[in-house]
Length: 394
Image 1 (cartoon, rainbow, N blue to C red):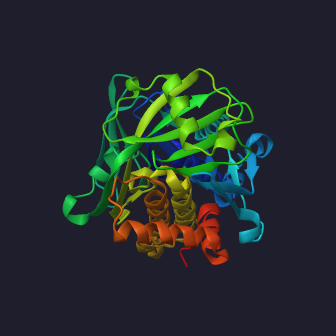
Image 2 (cartoon, rainbow, N blue to C red):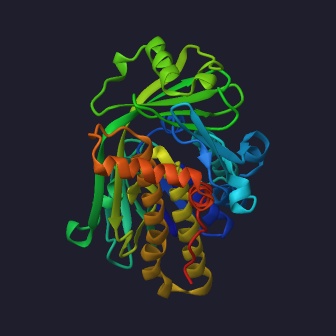
């Protein structure tokens, strides 16, 4: 089998890239080690930057996010009983975010790919990348019990942190930066109305909490828990009781509880691999970088990578601009590191690190208090939250 661009990974990054390439008239095949049902069943992010919504429209899959997504013009920060609203629209000239689950983004992209008759090889085993430093790279995998070879011009690695793509780059060619955090997020999904019409990020002496949503009838809540905590230790009742303690009393009074649809614990991790391109292999999304979920940047960063990569491939195939290839990694990394900084900042100021009340801790508290009480500080938070402008290759 032969294609122009082979895409490894059928998550939202790979599917979005495939759809945009299709609209550029560039042939592509996606290879995914999991089943379609497994990919669709993953519970992930739900806050889309305005730039990502616009990119979904460019890909021709914006109708449902417009119809069913929930636009948010602001969100709240809670410090104990104190509540501060970050007015995104007022602070950024009318920009906003949209609450629309990653599962729904994936569903829309899968449907568009099926409708276009594009090839996706699900449950491909033992995927291996070859010849990425040559002019004729290819993939090999076991598909439907038989070995197959997929020849291509370029490979896009959109297969996540644990995927084969980044691992195919020689270790001597990569520099990695990472930070682990001493806690994780325990998430609960329930068919209950959200406690508030906007997201609430709560800092409390017992630990961080987030009140979020997926729709007007489905809520998503998170609690900071120690690293290594087991989800089995948390009954629904224990979760709801602890959440009520960490959010302001007037908010807790409005909380509607119910049986969980899903509970899971996600560790918090920051990671960046440089460069994001080697030979004819390009990394995008979690294959190249991970951010803590505090700033809602993971899925959105994948989209910004794809925004650069699809335009690069269009320039290569339609204008012969192979000279732009070396610009891919530095272009993406400029925005990646700004998002890493914001996610780190939000994580640092909203979570309990168990630190003694020393000079550094007092300075951290003072910095956060200043940011929430300053128009300039709130503007910085708002500009980063709605999403910084996408970087361009030229």
